Every structure is written in C-alpha cells, then in structure tokens.
Image (cartoon, rainbow, N blue to C red; front, side):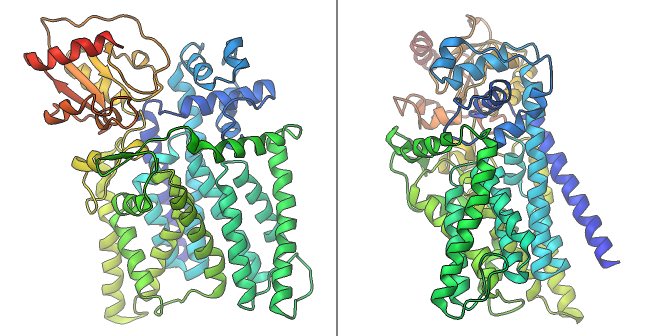
Length: 553
C-alpha cells in the first residue's frame, strides 16, 4: 500500500513537471542557440554530414530533430555559401523563418523531445533516492526535482545541459549498482550511457574523470571494481589495476556508441569538436556577475549561482543532510565513490574552467545535490511524535515550491529570494540565468495590450522579433542575424523602448554603458524579466539619445 501511494505521488509530480515544462516551451520564444541546434540536427538527418554546430556532439540534436525529419513538408535547403562556410547561424535563421512550416511549430515539437528527457531525469533521481534510502527519500527527491523551476526551464529548451545531466547521472547510477552486485548488465549499461553522455556534450569527459576517480577510491577502500567476471584482486595495487582495465572496457563500449551517433565514418569529428571547445576561451568571452563584466570569470561564480538559483528547500535539506552526515543512513564507500566524488570532480572542474554562462553549466552535478537533500528524511526519528513532527517539517519545507507556479512562464529568471529576488536578479546574474532571448512572446502580449505600437527595440538573441508580430525600429543589440523590414515610429503616439536585460547590463556590447542611462528610469513592465519596457513619451532627453542609436542600427 505504501509503495502504491508513493508511486501515485511520484506520477502526479512527474505530470506536474511535464505540464509546467510544456507551458514554458509554449511561452518562450526561440532562445539564443536553439535555432542552430535544431537546424544542425535536421541537417544530419538530411545529409549525413556533421559539419554544422561542430562545437557540440550530435546525439541530442539528432533526437530533437526526429519530429522534423519525419515530416515531408519540412524543407532543408541551405544557402550554398553558408553551407560551405559552416555558418549555422544563417542556415538556422533561414530554416526556421523561411520554411513551409511555422518556426514555432518546429521549435515546439523539438522541445517536447527534450521535455521527455527531463521527465526521465526526474524519475531517475527519484528512483536512485529510493534505492539509496527508501520510499520516503524517493518521494522527497522526486518532489524536489519536479518542483524545481530551473529543471523545468532547461527541459523545455534545446540546451545540451539537461541531456548530459540525464546520461551522466544514469552512468553513475549504473556503476553504483554494478559495484554493489557485480551484474554484467549494469556494467555494459554504464558503457552505453557513458557513450550517450559523450555524444551529448563535450564536458562529459569530466564525467569520465569523476567516475574514474570514484572507482579508484572505491578500490583503495577495499571495494571490488573490475571487468565483469574477473577474479578478485588481493592487493590495493592490483585492485587499482582492475579499475583501469574496467574503464578501458567501458571506454570501448562508449566509443562504439559515439561512433554510431556520428554515422560511423565521421567519428573524428568528435575529436575536432572537443578541440574547438578547448580553445573557446581564445574568443574573447564576456561574463557578468554582481554588476561586473569580466573575460576571465570568477572562481566563486557557481557558488553564487547556486546560492541564488537553487530552491530554498533543496538548499536547506541538503545542508541538514551534510551537517548530519553521522546520523541517519550513512554514506557508504559505494555512495561516496559513485555519487559524491563524480559530482565534486565535475563541479570543481567547471568552476576552474570559468566558463561562467549560467546555472545550466552545473546541471550535470545538480542531481547529486537533490539526492543528498533527500537523504535528510533518514535523519527523522523512525517512530512516535518526533517522526510526525520531522515529516511535517520536511513537507513544510518543500510545499512553498508549489507556490512558485504563480511565476509560470518566467522559469529562466527564477531567484530563490535568499541570494537575490526576481526584482534585483539583473544586478547579480546575467546570460541564461535571466535573459537567453526567450522573452519575445511575452513582449508581444504586453505590446498588444498597449495597442500594438511600433517600438524601439534592442534585442539580445537570434530570433526574428517580427516573426512574433513585433513591429520595431532596431536599436543596437547583440546576436542579430536577419535585417528586419523598415518601420517608422509615429511621433504623435506613444514612444516605447524595449531593451533586453543583457543589453541593459552591456555584457556583450562594444560600448558596455550604451544603455546604462535607461537603468536610471523605472520600466512600465519587465515582461518575463528578460526584456524591460519603457514608456518615454514626452521625455525629450531620451528622444535625443534614441535618434542617433536608431540611425546606427
């Protein structure tokens, strides 16, 4: 009976997660990278050529593009020059906005594939917690994951981070099972999922390093980890040797999976893409934190991001669990090796890389934080009034996460109210933490309520604002591809200015302070928090500033 109730609760939580992610997928306009990812995936199916978007492996793009590849009315006819020069931005723009099928219909069908992957990740987190610490921990982990606005946001968008989190977590779980029972099927399943992780995003190499380090620690602590069927090693040195032999076998399975994802003959493209990612920092990156812009990043960036973006329930329960490590169900050497160490290695390596572009980069290590938070339920007394009070306290900690649904459609700009609030998030974080180009649909709704005027628009993104019905005069921004048709501001009507938060911050603009003067004025709307709307009708000073900006568009 208890298990049936737990399954029912987890099923309801999964349904909530899918519904919320689907709502966000329907609400958010095309984000910065989505067009390039989807067009690349379609090109792989149509041509068998992996030249586009080489900086990411192909697996997730292939999965997202399946709905489009199965349709006869979706054309892929790239410009010859853009194809020759591997210009995925131009090809993506034409594919989405000059196709026979509406661009948002194409995006939405692909996004729903990723939502399915997100639901699998939530279910896996709940299942692993159940296997670790019982039914209560399983339900708690499922609740923490399903109610997390960050997970819902990145499940609803075509970003590689969630897929990598799914396959990396599945690999860690499979090796945890294998270390416990020596089952051959878990070993080769781990090889399969490791290959899927490596074919999803290049930081998966950090997953390999973390799992290898965990397995070595497990062996040195007396655990048995080797090739299935191999005899037990008598000394610690021999046990470490068996770990290396096992990872060679896992690597061969993973390499075969990666090769299949590249169609076999294009396997070397994986190495070329990894090299491209390794030299990424040579391309003058810009990062934003606490009002500062840096090309070097900060060692503490992700600590601040986690403090600001992680839901309070997960933070509190994880803290209680870690502080009470000697109480409740303790972490055995197997949990330390395949749960804690891989996540720690990944998080430390990502922090050291200083690619400070948002919470999503840390997502592959995030499930472990939820799992540790779920362990807190084992600290509750097993019986009596103390148990009732303990469970009530945990429920009271988790339930406020349900209230967050009042911000439906604003999942990317989530702030937990501890490190920052939604109202001042723009002062603390930038990029995909708040503005990834997703706000055009919400902006259109706001403008429709104001009579649908022609506006001044400084947009940070690669979508076409006019495709969302936004009539605008373009101001300098970041990421633009297509030149819009000419529009004219009616000087006798309202003068409305819309500026993406990334441009207000100036992170990616040549002139960082280009729009800082607008930050001194109160917006009439923050739409979904990614684009701010200013009514400057009658403000002669602003008019004088806008006219030369519009002339340089």
